[in-house]
Length: 450
Image (cartoon, rainbow, N blue to C red; front, side, top):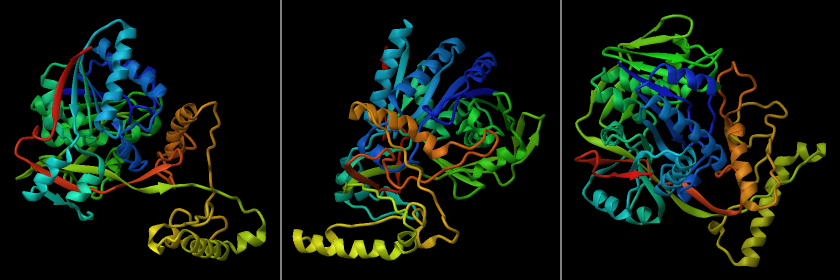
């Protein structure tokens, strides 16, 4: 059996320190936490930066480094620095060095990077080793050259290579959410279907429990099943909460594709062992004929300026559609006339925050108001400080629930980055997989003694 301690769904979201101590006392074989997400859009990958505040990241990471020392087992983070680009990995390595120095200890660190040079991918594209997923934009050498950052999502094989080095801390670039959890059980010969299914259920910490914001869970993987145990007070796993997580960020509730194959949970059975724990058996891992890794890339598509006004007059509110359309028409005409621009050289869009701003023409509710605009305005003594505070606010505006007992919500940001400053706008421009002869062909692994 292999026991994985998962402190939280992502570094930067917080975790219950009391529950974490319970996890350490349970003698895990590895501590794993995700560091990233594409939830808030392409800007973070495009810029190669973290969306989470450095101060929050540092405090939480220091707590996990202390937990690693107590438990005496590897600490693994995937998709470091939110986006997993090399600059974000280096950012977390720097933080790690600072923490180790303050704690008066040293550690062997494995650094796995996922960055993909454009020249490598252009050669792979020419050789027919890049395959589009559906839906995928068309790509060319020019698109690859335009990307400011391209990463490949590492799987369990790349994480296993880092574990085999004997590192105490593993800082990985972009990985699949499940890879950092599934790797060790697979290495130790546990059931492959259980390892991948358990990793999928555990990837977001206590989201698979009745107190989804509590964070800390234990995952036990054995020869034919896995068991989920939430560790915070008031957090319980049930067959419903566990099985439902296969729907999270997944187009098919029964199939999950990973590098090297796919997970099939069609025959999975969910059993409540008691009021807190759930055991799952019957999951299958199906190896693929080709080994592929998914690619993510971001490029600059233009530059944006954001303005906002508020309408309170009932007459204007009642006629907001016509008012906005008239402004767009008149402003476009003036720009074309006075700046000499072609009509397709720019875009003006007015969104009504409070009415159809999220879905536009797809909105199927007509009550007034349909939406409320909640805008966080941060004022500070410097731009850097305001940005730091804004990044601290960011995850609350994206996921904070009204009560602890309800399922975690996800709200919609109208912009990416969510903390808005004037600057370049990025888009994701790759939804493709890269075929590899060897899982490490597109990745680099370095050992640091800090």
